View 1 (cartoon, rainbow, N blue to C red):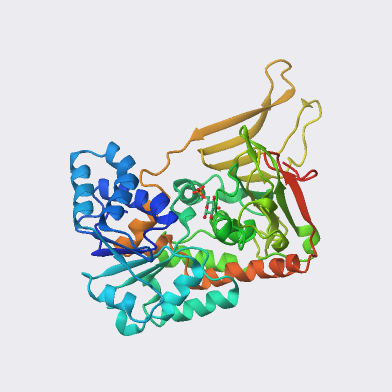
View 2: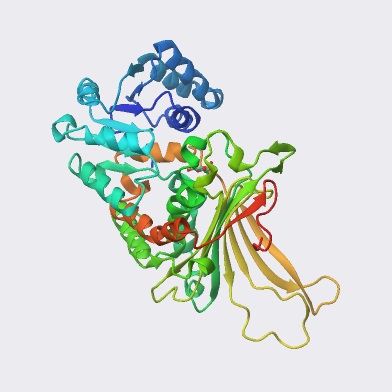
Length: 462
Ligand code: BG6
């Protein structure tokens, strides 16, 4: 995607917040520095009473990295953005305030709601169709709603304001180059498709184990937990790309139709005590530093039983995948950082007698940071020629120059919803998880514990 923006003004709501500083502005800066945001004006708005200088300071810091790598044209563009930007203080939920701001901006405007979900919802409810001129794009951060019903309600609110293809529900994993590489790997090669099914694949694991702990995000995270934070959005999207039927094109309609069809066939089945697991970290040492017990972290309400590690088995009830478990797992404060999708193939139907050594199934591993592709095969070992040994074919894949948020923003600015989650899919992801959320709320599944820095509770396979 390299076309120039159709959007004239990017309005970021929540401009003084953490997400804007840490992810949005650095992503935007890469785009700007590569000349992909020509003619764009940036406006920041927030509830904080910031001066223009405070906003400029934030831009300076968030743009620094991209600026240091930019050529002279890129540096000029970054400077232009800084010279033409403005900061406005407003209460987005107060009637008329956001509408008035939008009306004063050069359109088309993309309004990025980098705000807590409840506030975004109220801000959208405060808008009327007359407040959003034709061409306006609404960009919603995750989580999109907090249940199937609330996602549906939010979809209704948004649909009354702008057409579906002008709504961008952000899932920055769809902007990760290696996540998109799943499509190239699967659909631009012939060798995988004949074996990419229940006949040949035993299981698929999608793992996102982080060595980060709470990092001061209690206000958001304690109300979310690992299941909502990672599995409901990012990991289900990766699963969908791993499992969809080959689309006729990778334009937004074909690809998002395929994803929606796949997710409609997916569910997490009872018994939840067997098909799901949850755990919470206790005090421990992580990378040489002491991490406090999650339950005692500032801002955490221990009685909420928020999980920091979640694992679910998703079943996809269609011809291709019937009976193949898709295991999705993500957790915080784990000793080993592991971010990958692992496809485990079935064993050979008959290993010729006479072979010795380890006979392991083939595994294809797609790493999401570092971005790698690995294929584990059994070969004859170096010593005894009939002794099997493991070899790994490995490739380093290139990460995107733009950063995931840069990719996502490029879609917003050029009016391409390909990397956005479609409305029906956003609801369906909640539908898949809701029975688990209910079972966990009933305490049907024990909340296990693991020390920070460990590889999870005892007995969980690595
Ligand atoms: C975010 C989650 O959406 O994704 C975080 O809220 C998580 O909890 C993050 O750490 C992981 O994404 P990335 O791009 O930082 O690997």
